[in-house]
Amino acid sequence: MDLRDSLCRFYYDSTVSDLRQVNKTGGGELSYNSIMYLDVISYQQALGVCTVTTLADTLHISRAAATIKVGELVKLGLVTKTRSEEDRRVSYLSVTGPAALALERAARQVEAAYSQDEIDLFCAILDIFSKEYQKDL
Image (tube, rainbow, N blue to C red; front, side):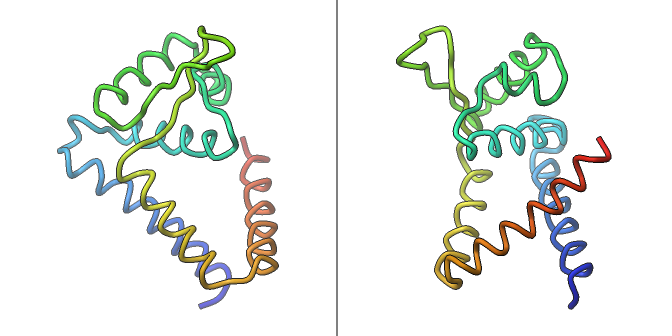
């Protein structure tokens, strides 16, 4: 398999996994839109901070719309809100449950199988792809 095939396969597998999650709930409790929110929250959480404000700013939506969606995800037990100790008006968001576990399992397998230099190279390569995707937005 070459680079393009591997990237297409990864994107395909990610998309199919997301759609299967929707089908598990019959599209009722968990919509594709909700899964996309979980992906964004998970990424921002990995960067160190995710709040309703950062989520709204990233998606170019109102804070009210982000608050409503986050409330739905909290009710489903997929997102938790933790109040900031420094500023009680701020709550940090984090993804819980299966969505968080799959990424963590994959990261642990990569860390066990590859050296830090190889992981750093892989991260640099992924950064190139991310930057190219962002140019189209």
